Image (cartoon, rainbow, N blue to C red; front, side, top):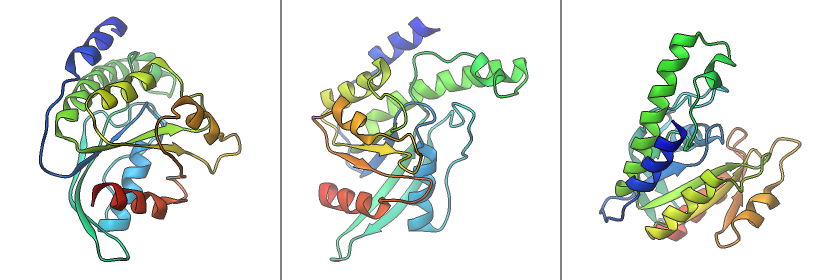
Length: 209
């Protein structure tokens, strides 16, 4: 499965253009993508959009929230489509789920769904105009998967804003994210606590309006 996923990741990245302003939330599993998607959606629409769980690959299909309007203090507005992507990984093992108490049969089904979701997330790069790439600042972000995500976004000339998430945790170290990807701006956030989300909105307005 590892080899097949690596090949799919390599084969499916391809360049294209599209007109709508769609923002994809990318990153590895459990980085906080869905928590951030919910924070943004709730702030701007009053409704959450994704399920959140400590179980890896809780998001196994692309979750969409369309017609989300972000308005700046100076009156500028952006109409966005938010796309909460499954976590990108080259290794989806059913034991990732059994370790969290799921039965083996359900775990295998979830592993298959997660693999399908990764392929779908990669294909969706044909439909995004910008990406928020979310990393867990309590972990080392310099991994093969994360480098692949950033490298393929760069190759497609998709605007990137990297978020060092989970800064509310004691062992958070956002400097590791900056050091791993110094070529891109990094914003420290806590999606769970809503810290620096207003700064995120400002960055989106400045970059896309």
